[in-house]
Image (cartoon, rainbow, N blue to C red; front, top):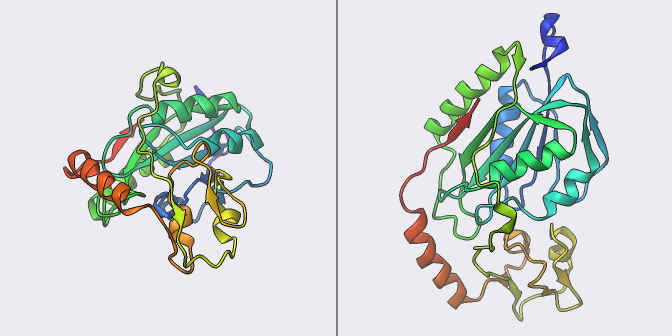
Length: 259
């Protein structure tokens, strides 16, 4: 059992929120959590950030998108700069209306290696990063109401116990099932370098802004931030992705909560 000392003394519980959000979907969920917790402080992890230490009296939320049922690879580097002290944490998976698969368990394992203890978890729906048609308008009123109830329970807790997240413990041995979608620059590209600067995975190199497939995580941040709209996924790949996602993501999925 983990006790929040400030809570026992009748003081306001402390919170911290970290988020990895290439296209804004995860940030929209992190923003809601922050407001619900009285404008709790937030720190972005999409690009490398500053070293941070979290004490054992702070409930920390790690918000991240789900890519093919896994956490974004850069999260492994980002978590190296965050250290807990047996601190309680809540992994928050944000998925594009398909499934969370093993992502919550993977994030929980990673956080615990950094000195945290998982005491709750949740999964929220946001527009799919590859095809925002799926999950459009999420989180909606119903999602927000359910998240509100979950956070109210956390705020009311006098103490926390470790909670096991769902997923296959053998996730690291599974073959990646992501769609091989790698954005490329068209002739309209002016070489401003913004996509290279803000790529979370460092996957864009050279004066022609070429994508390095072995590093690209298909997060679509370069597409979303391109000022000239000259960075895109080739049309045949976009069509194939849309047809695949239509089969997997058309049926409405609901948020999931673990406490």
